[in-house]
Amino acid sequence: MFRGSTHTMDGEAVLSALQGDTDGNPDARDVKILIVDDDEDFARTLELILGREGFRVSRYPSAERFLAEADLEPRACLLLDVHLPQMSGVELQEELNRRRVAIPVVFMSGQSDVPTSVRALKGGAVDFLEKPFDYDALRQALATALEHERRLRESEHVVRRARAVRRRYERLTEREREVLELVVDELTSSQVAERLGLSRRTVEHHREHIMDKLGARSTQHLLLMAVLCGICKPHERVDA
Image (tube, rainbow, N blue to C red; front, side, top):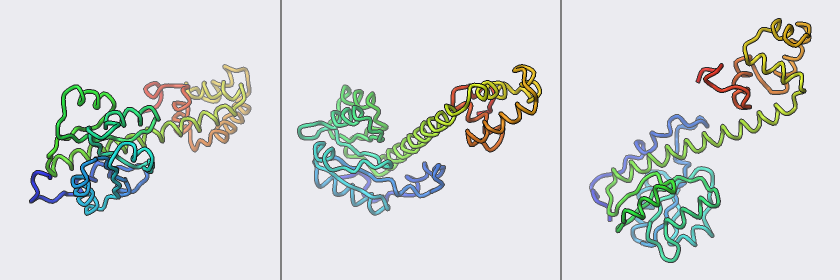
């Protein structure tokens, strides 16, 4: 079934890509591995190997069963056979893309062809394994998929954070927005007061309101929020 059957899969090596997990949990075994393959013996063997390494695994014999039954939880990656009955693996990938399901996909195939491989990679596949593959190839593909999954979560986190900051920004008055833009330009309170024809004390009062409404803990934090709001670009005022 697999080449190199005398070797054991090094689960820790597979998991090493997620040591920088933004949730602070270095153990990535809460990532669920979803297997879609109509070869029951192959899928069962794969499930046993991954289960032995501590992964949670679910397998499905067809794309249709997967779409009907799979729990597409936030932390998952998909091991997907290309040639499936009825809906193919590539068609399933395209359906997931259409539904905006962000999940890393590793394709598997015993008879792949260049056009299919290109189509799968263009659809966002993170790797393509030719059966029979050895444990090292599987381990590397999983490491790539898990790293991709981590980046997806980080990207989604940044988007959610930006939306939340933008909602807070909308609560600012017109005057507070003017003050914020000048603060982002690194003007002092005295300079902002002179520019807007206000007293320094009034500017300080506006700054306090801005910090409070945005939930900023410091001026540096305020600048980072300004980046998320699109008021300034990272390279303009804030170190990456």
